Amino acid sequence: MEVRINRGVLSLVEGDITKQDTDAIVNAANKSLRGGGGVDGAIHRAGGPKILEECIKIGGCETGEAVITTGGNLRAKYVIHTVGPVYRDGLHNEPRLLENAYRNCLRLASSKGIKSIAFPSISTGAYGYPIEDAAEIALKTAINCLREEDTGIELIRFVLFGQNALSVYEKKLKELL
Image (tube, rainbow, N blue to C red; front, side, top):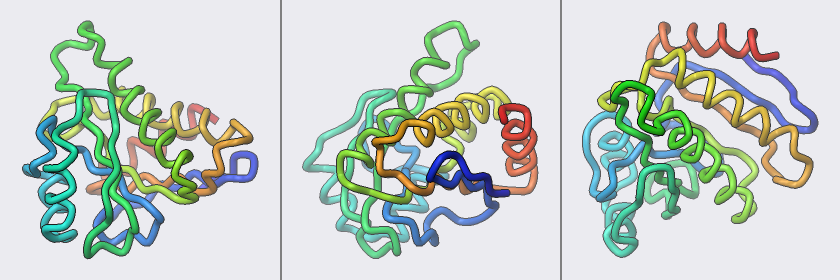
């Protein structure tokens, strides 16, 4: 599914984020930036040791913040690493922290002149965030970014794991537009 918002495009696809040809992909990282399971492990494996070397130099990343490294062996030139919140009950700042994770990735991309970016569904795997709630936060943040005239971002793609995740995002996007 693809929609045009101002001069940009918001795209939803099912697939493998490590195979995206966008300028940057986003890693749903842990605070240590040392790699892990899920998307984080897949990006580190596909991108090779250069990404981990840069992550070690950076030292870490707090929840809701974002940092950038090379893309290593990936098609994407950059990896933007962000740490989403671990979901407890939605009453411990999780929505604001998740929104900050997306917003800070987009701000960092804009500041680096990145035109296209691919996101996974942050925090909905091992961190337990309910996908319906996470999709709404992710999509609202992306739509707001594309509605701003000065970001320079032309494509925001959500690369979702499995048909169920894609369906949730498609339904939510239709509700929001």
